[in-house]
Figure 1 (tube, rainbow, N blue to C red):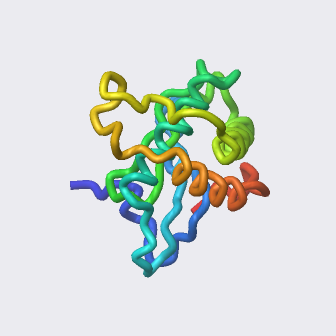
Figure 2 (figure 1 turned 30 degrees about the vertical axis):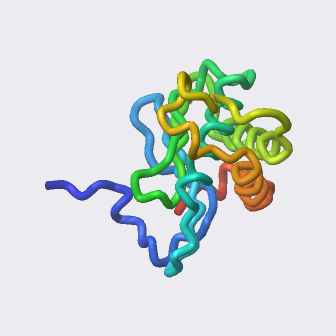
Length: 152
């Protein structure tokens, strides 16, 4: 079998950041990494879930919502994937969009989006303050990021 491209990245050296994972036609996948190499510093399940609700909601309510295909956690729980249509949003615009929504999430006021039994199968695992704290960390991390810094 062919090795999956993301398995060729040395996770012992990969620093938290924002990376271009792949291009499939007009669909571009960004890899948003949070875990520090060689540590057990993973986000908790509640933090992962809370960031997912905040960022997915903000992306799908942004002016670029038509370009948003998916935002969600990686199976390995070291970060998130953001998929978008590059025919509607350039890579530079996608970087700026992520910077904006993470900053917006860090300052979010109100109830956690989708925090009810009817909207989420694991709604009790959501914590708006924990999600905001993680978004604040990541917003600071990527604040100076550019398209040129997307390479692993």
